[in-house]
Amino acid sequence: MDILIKLEEGFEQFLRFTSFANFQWEHGAMICVGLFFLYLAIKKDYEPLLLVPIGFGILVGNIPFFEAAGLQIGIYEEGSVLNYLYFGVLKGIYPPLIFLGIGAMTDFSALLSNPKLMILGAAAQIGIFVTFIVALALGFDINQAAAIGIIGGADGPTAIFLSSKLAPELIGAIAIAAYSYMALVPVIQPPIIKLLTTKQERLIKMKPPRAVSKVEKMIFPIVGLLLTTFISPGGLPLLGMLFFGNLLKESGVTKRLADTASKPLIDIVTILLGLTVGASTQATTFLTPQSIMIFVLGAISFMIATAGGVLFAKVMNLFLKGDNKINPMIGAAGVSAVPDSARVVQQLGIKEDPTNYLLMHSMAPNVSGVIGSAVAAGIMLSLLSGIL
Image (cartoon, rainbow, N blue to C red; front, side, top):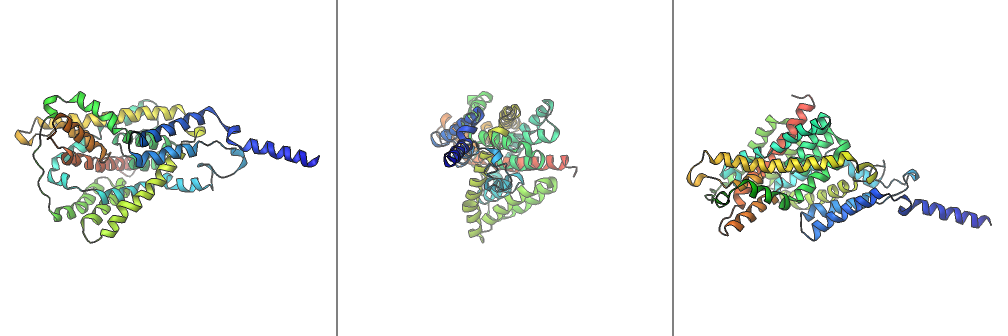
């Protein structure tokens, strides 16, 4: 009889520990979001390297469990494996490593051949500051508003880095929003570009970029580091790693290091970052009205950034003549989604004229947008930390 009672108690405990017993509708909603991300990545090929880890991470983070049992399996439970991996997000470790890989993969030749296009990368950062003001008006405190605003740069690592410093309580929502809009660049940007440009403007052909010497490409990361970090020392962890990675690539004597940074290292960090960011969307802590508001503000920020780049390109054309005029579509590439924004511009250009290749031209504002968003994050961090 005692054995039967113990078996019954054990079975009841087993049922209490199952996910079925701890399931809430919020878990189901987030699981659907995770499946949607996987659909976009696998079926639509929208940033699969980001959305597959994030989407699967959302599934992992929303398997409900009996929290009082102290099993140490949830991402927010101290001592759990996921919590240790999430440490790299919370402390801003992963973003600089991502920037190291980006630097080792990036060719700044397009920017060096036509430096005035750097202005478009700066112009696109208007989305960050407009959203910062709107977030303040909606009741977010100043640190939270700054972290939310950086979504407009369409730069996931920068958004994670700044939110880890200023608003760690919002890091999950901000990271998911930033990476979602990065992945949806091919959906969001084309309508805005077409709305703000005429057929004639979209047909503008730009003169070929000049050849850039090896010496110029080697000097650039050193000069770029000194200029940007003297202006924005708060961005040193990101900008320092970005330019260091680029020097590894361009020096010609550290090919093994550049290959490691641009391939195995960035792949490993992307897996860990995507999985843990996805898992941080645990329904019991993530699914709140505040998170939904962050998603809306992120969309607004990204659209304003895209529009800002396009409109500023049109303004620049007022002062340029002949074959010096620029195709205003490349202004949309001023956001930091490298190289997806540049590809969107290239595809739109080819649709208008199959002989009009804009990829190299659009890469200039695209890579300057990466630098611009990191500088903007550094400025906000410096100001709000009382450094300046």
